Amino acid sequence: MSKIEKKFNHKYITALGDERAYVKFNGLNTLWFNTGTLCNISCEGCYIESSPTNNKLLYLTQKDVEKYLKQIKKYNLSCNTIGITGGEPFMNKEIISILSLFIKENYNILVLTNAMQPMLNKIKELIKFSNYSKLTLRISLDHFNKEEHEKIRGINTWDKAIKGIRWLVNNNFRINIASRIINKDEKIVRDGFAKLFKENNLDINAYNNDHLVLFPEMNLQDNTPEITKSCWEILDSNPKDMMCANSRMIVKRKEDSKTHVVSCTLIPYENNFSYGSNLKNSFKRVYLNHPFCSKFCVLGGASCSNKP
Ligand code: SF4
Ligand code: SF4
Image 1 (cartoon, rainbow, N blue to C red):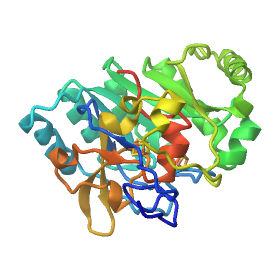
Image 2: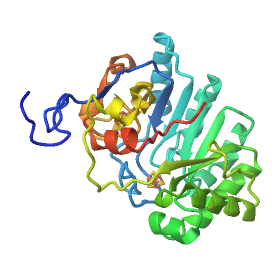
Image 3: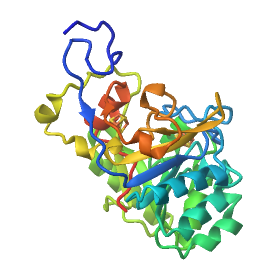
């Protein structure tokens, strides 16, 4: 086997000439929709580089979404959960009608939001979904402390997010909070959030993994090793646990204004991880030749999915 010079370059072979690891498709459980990359804030380290000006992924429309709901039915797919991410999904003008479509079809729905002004602007419409028990909103707080959170998310990002979380809790929405394990010390993080929730009278259990979802801390600049076929055994890791084994995401790219099916929520821009516009064409092996495969999934153990 010839030696490939650049890491992550070749689809099937690593830079050292080993066979690259892949993930087999194992049936569609979760279909994610990226409703657009525009966000009201720009957080340091946002893996999708969202900001008030990044519109590399355009807003999805109700019509775009309907097309994929039709495909799920046409191909009789087992998908039971819909994930919605951005950018900030509540900046999409059609988000309420998009949510209505999923509710009508009785899906489990997970919406990733920062719960700030774009969501607060929609509470008059959002309130009608409060009784739908299969809807969960996941709100990111980068720290249990305002100052640390704002170091990452920018000034004036804390109070608005807390206001949004309070509104959701007070109106009986099912929510969870997502954050990071700081310095590998989960206990400090859970204790810190427990105090925050108590002070704000929020009925969220910081010691329950489903209420406070903690992801490993990641430095996107760090170098990361390539994953070979033998890594699964060495790391005692199972390819079936990777998001791309049972999920796909729909994006709409600015460059061609078309929807594309991509392997997962983490790699929306790269053609190597894109499969055209038809869901069925995406049900293929995914070769892990992207640093995020190594950093987030195989070594970091992160997944955006929620337990249905
Ligand atoms: S709120 Fe989320 S999508 Fe928006 S910039 Fe921050 S991490 Fe990215
Ligand atoms: S980054 Fe995406 S494609 Fe790579 S292993 Fe993770 S889920 Fe699969």
